[in-house]
Image 1 (cartoon, helix red, strand yellow):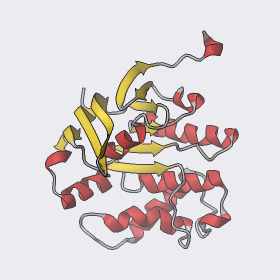
Image 2 (cartoon, helix red, strand yellow; image 1 turned 180 degrees about the vertical axis):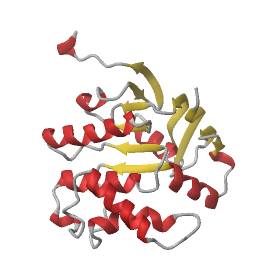
Image 3 (cartoon, one colour; image 1 turned 135 degrees about the vertical axis):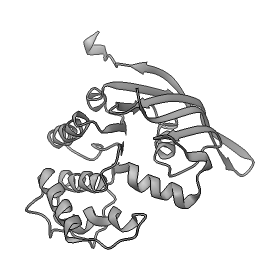
Length: 236
């Protein structure tokens, strides 16, 4: 079994004046390639900190994070940025689109940060157009975020996350701002990506969303409290 990511006794502390916040307290977990995981937990449980570390947006205080065979802790900032841009796609609750950019331009954004710094080619543009079509936005390429619904903006974010063909997709509350019908559409897209073999790790507080994953991780006080399928009161 090949691992997309592995956490070994991961700790993350933040210093707020004289106070130390222990956001993660010895988290160890494997994410096999093709995994589909929902991370849940109350506010302050450490789930967002965990996702930031998985995305190599922050470094652990101690412990090891192995990303596709690379030990994140010993990488230079430049090398870490290169690997992050190549291996990880990000989807955020607030979409994080650039308001003055069109749909097509927003999808192209990760291409500007590639290690070789090459210009965006006609082939690159065609890939972005194909991704826009895949998420149902073929007729919205010239629209800007304010001209799109929340669901359409999230579709742009999904296409942007895929543009560099990442191995792992990290989703932070990907349906948090959406109605139930649009939530279903977005989760069907993510499910399809996982069926193709992509590893998906998402943070969510919605049980209905978590059930779409193959497994769930529940966090509490910076630790993994339990793993497995969730059972609601109505299902007992």
